[in-house]
Length: 354
Image (cartoon, rainbow, N blue to C red; front, side, top):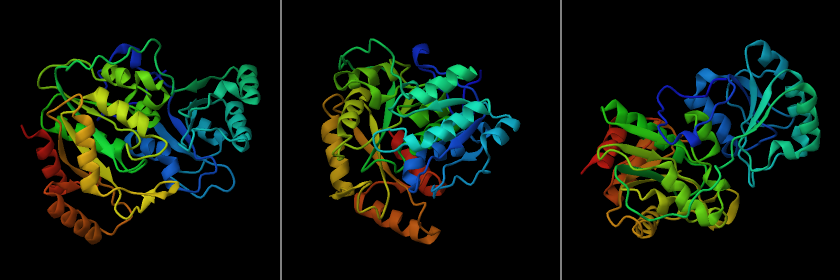
């Protein structure tokens, strides 16, 4: 078996957090109609392209990664070894309507990899088909046993955590881009994955939203242990402390990570939290202040290195305008890591400033 690992990602964490998965992949989009709920598929496409042969979906799906649409048999003929459920929906559920497509994949000779909260083996039809065909059902969202309660002890090394005004707006992409930029400057840096997609990309990590609440901060301590004084752990954020459903995992990760630097991630134009129209997206100044206040519990020296904007829906000139205005208002660098350029280099420099 081979791990799905982007060549720009290093995962130097504890061996217990390492993961080996069969690749290449066929990315399964289910019946998703909003791109935000297909972030696992997009993340693998963008950060592990060498491990993705195509996409597959049910009738009614309205989202595409742009990869070739292949049936499971066609994908297997092109070398695919597993179907990855590329969906990250509310609650992490596997819909009954997906099961025939998943069984079709097993019959084509593919294993199934899932990062959903629901366990593949808990679906009787799927479990029976896998046993009959000798295929594997692999759940990525499985934390290690015996996670300790957090100690709160200050650890050696340097840490950066990406945080967000909402879910699904670029925390993982920002962390991956910053870790890559740090290494490009000759620094010793690791990307630390905390969600299903990041774990699949990096080949290991801690599925923070599958950890019992009392042990969230302890899990973050395991993920980012003591390191050399000049080593950076760039930690993928989860959820948002402003989210009515997911604030708990965000807060536990913030406390346990003890970040020296945070980078706030935001999507301009998002008026309310994804899927929660009664909850407006917080203002940037408020979001930075709240994260610094909460994070100071375990690291009094915490600071904000800048803001990462997801401007994928904007024309280049519009993206440049909104980032420039936000930077002037905040007095901090604002950049879109996927656009790169001078704005992103200023963000990197700000994060690394003593």
